[in-house]
Image (tube, rainbow, N blue to C red; front, side, top):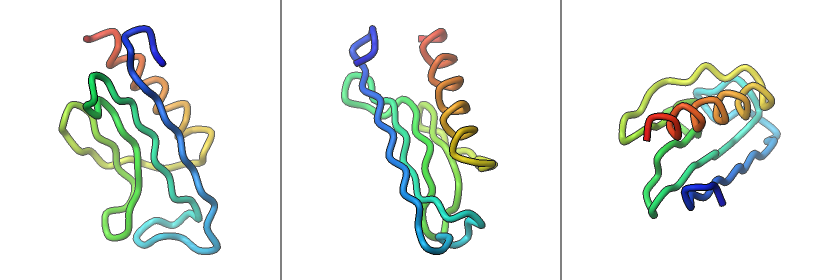
Length: 84
């Protein structure tokens, strides 16, 4: 739990092959939920590729590696928390 009562969940799978259109072998879901609503999420899915969501807006995400993914998520969560 976060100080504001939010929930953070990280799930990362290493797959035998990339999920198109991604060029890396990871499937992931990182989410920050506040008051039952997704405030922030990073994920990839077949047909959409790497992307992230913040306050209902979806943006492309340039995946580098899992460590960078987690760093980017934490940085964006800290920005969200500072603004809300």
